[in-house]
Length: 339
Image (cartoon, rainbow, N blue to C red; front, side, top):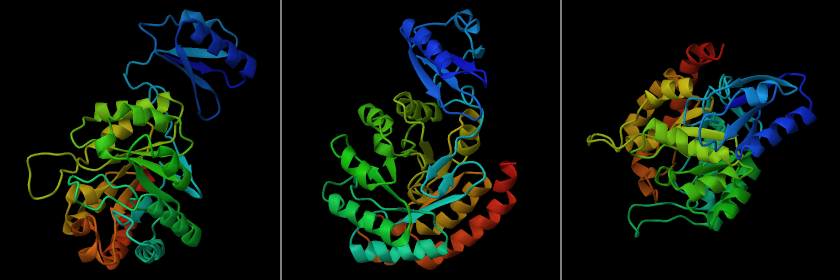
């Protein structure tokens, strides 16, 4: 249930509603909104009687929530969530481009790519310091040394940085260095990690699991928000199917479905979906035409020498073209969607 307060509700009236909710053995979760406060009722074992709240001072209405993902749902928050990362806004009315190598390999590699993607139009820089790899013999990332390189990239270019956290043990470290913490596809249902992300002061970029339904993905976001962190960015990165012409199958239908079901911003990662650079540009164009709020694209100045995912990384000049093309599409489609 969602308790919607009057615009004129006082802090004391809000506290009274919270006490009633907690007195029922439920959790009260205030929800940031526009011009009024709403309070979600969580952990209820069954239906909650609206009459318990409608007579309280400052309460406007009590709205039943039918979705299992309560905080993520538009039933709880009708307006789109906008997430600020430094000077960048992610969400409705904006197209955010996140770009960089799959893995941080060296100081020179990271700075070379960062300077180019910034000049081309990227808003955030991505790069893995801890890399979950299918083979235990593959490059696993530089660890904290990679995080320090990311911090240097931010200092020198002004680009906020996005990097993945792999486990509970290294969360504090990643949180310290990153501007946005990524939960990767393999960890989408790592519930202890999701709960820790929910306690973070950083925005969380949550990738869809490689075999996850949209409901499962949104429930994973609910885990984060239920712990108090409302700064969640969803990322569609393709799901595993029977095809062999690409690494995964990019599910662009997820974009309009998520935008209908949830107020959270959604970005698309065409690089991991494709696994091949020749597919990244057309998939990027399609994602922006579908009104995704952003893209996450892998770029490398020497992809033939990359230690991770070189085959799907764009050359810098290809990334230049991508930025030009997707911004043209956004100016036609994306801005109209935000009106």
